Length: 100
Image (tube, rainbow, N blue to C red; front, top):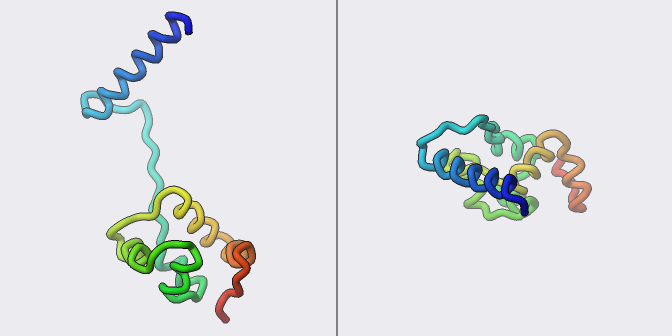
């Protein structure tokens, strides 16, 4: 690794530490609205128990999401976004028939 690249990486790490400690503001920030899990589940017609089984989380986790105590992260957030925009794609992919 050449010295210029090493120095640039070192400076970047120092800057990240300053941002983390609140000594410096980040150059940009990203925020995403939390999905309305209850609305998504109700739109599908599934009970909490069935919906939690379908997406692979505990009922307690689903309840925490629905009541705003916690928010889905990572793959769960993506799965819920797909569920919101195209619930049939998820139920078809998982081999489930949506409730009538």
